[in-house]
Image (tube, rainbow, N blue to C red; front, side, top):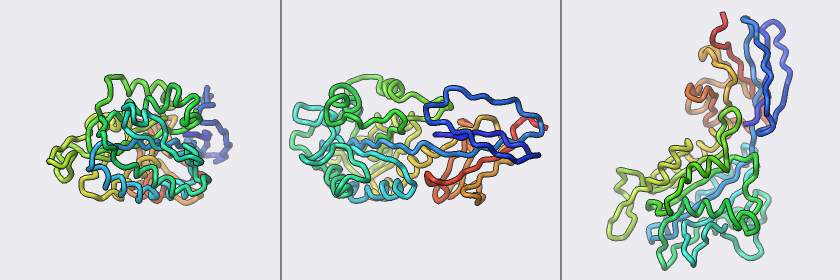
Length: 332
């Protein structure tokens, strides 16, 4: 998140904007505030999102799910457009076999591997790529391995994936599968933390999301003979990164995608406070209008991360003026 940070005294209520970029804030110079001082932050956020869909093509159970998922993908892009995000989208599969993508982005001749809102026929191309179909050779699910291949090596340097990952973006991985990962053993969490390290104030720069079979699901099958396999490796990665984990076994792809969308927007607009607040004193305004402390359509305080998280209709668009004011713990 990009932040503009100021100290606002109760006497003068003078707010001076001091901008710093997502990765450009190498130092902060906080004056020691007097005891009567209140903090205020005018918040803007880094609005770059690089979104990679990793799709299962291994079993017949995925064909219908791919189709439904592709038709509902506009739920993400419409909200991204409304919020003003600068986003890129690419699609690959979990197929690391000789005949598979092996991390390469899916695209057709004459169209770009990386889609943006300005790409001609953007929605049509996205639907086409997400509804990849099921491969006759039923490849093993190697989604984590496919991500590493997509974002490193020749694919990322000189292949179709080149230029996808931007230095200041939030990398979003969305795994869609009715099975569990079979990638070669590796420290994928550590590798992602290495290529996308946390920012100075703890802001995350990558997150994984999973749509598939969860432990306890019994309404959808991995195979026609009734085998059920939760995506435990994908779930573990999503939970580690703070991402959403959504079941697709009730057939409600719209609900699952809506929750994924909300989690992405909550994370990119989350603001880590520079001091511990008196929670009852926190006041948040968007474009001069105070918004409530509400987990559905307002803000909440995340004590573990000492941050403000925005929700629902209160997620601020890029061009909004957001002010957060509070008393610091320890002041008389």
